[in-house]
Length: 395
Picture 1 (cartoon, rainbow, N blue to C red):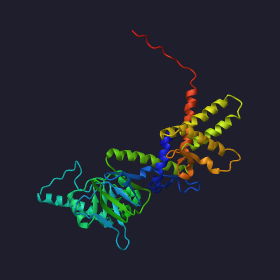
Picture 2 (cartoon, helix red, strand yellow; picture 1 turned 180 degrees about the vertical axis):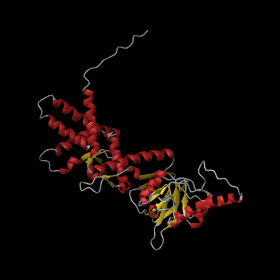
Picture 3 (cartoon, helix red, strand yellow; picture 1 turned 90 degrees about the vertical axis):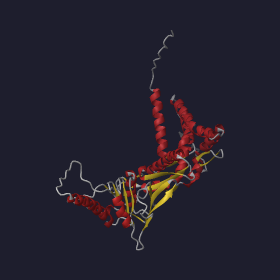
Picture 4 (tube, helix red, strand yellow; picture 1 turned 180 degrees about the horizontal axis):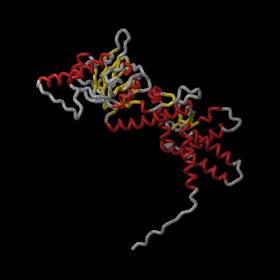
């Protein structure tokens, strides 16, 4: 567990950038201390085959969505106008297909010519819907449902990028990033159909770019806040899944750190310092509690020992050096204040100032680990009786 925590904390250094935009406050209206939240659901992770894993990147101030243009006649890029008007994005959760009568509705026609009028009106209803969306200023339309050929014709004529079958969760994140809203219906309180321009998100540019085997739509310079995108590149699906899991661990470490706002040096520094302190404290007691505290101090050294063994280093020598450094730092006459930050450097097989080296862990994780381990040990020790069943005699 200690080895995983140390590795996660080291990997988390590159994961700070996508977590910061997700910052929200619990209740900004109160005058008490503001508590910040960092929901990881706001971070969109896209996996794309091809290239090296080192070419994975964060879209700074932008957002990517795994979708492509519905028709080839649509433009591949939409930029902001020269007078500074941003690109407006409409995010829909409804069908953009030819209007059809609801189930169970019967229309009795006596004149066959009226059938054509009904079809024409159905087409006009669809055209009016699309016209209202375009008139509101939308230059990019993304929907979770379908877009048929009739609607595509109107979008192509207007020079609008339209994408269909988008993931609803991705659209919610995009709405957050661009400052817009996902529209589920165009009906208003009077029973008419209108499209509110306030529901449109804004950004500086929207482009369709080829990534790996397919295309993705990128939105650059998003006008909102609270969401970001990481594009992972890798050779195959298994590698991308493994990278996704490792990145999620790193993001969780950063989230814990930012929310608790306290950290401790990693690499076995906390366990070694606590072990030295408890051993010294145990000698001040004159009861059998001394034995329990000494055993607790010895148990804490399992973490730095395991870290050293996992790195194929001499655990006995490294832990001895680590304990000596912390014992020196805890003496009253110690002149080197940085000794208390001493931890393991498992690449070079020596001890160093891990706070200066940037190897840190969230303090809340250490506190909870110690608390849960102590509770588990107490629970086991409370079991004071045992019943052993004799094995059944063999035939």
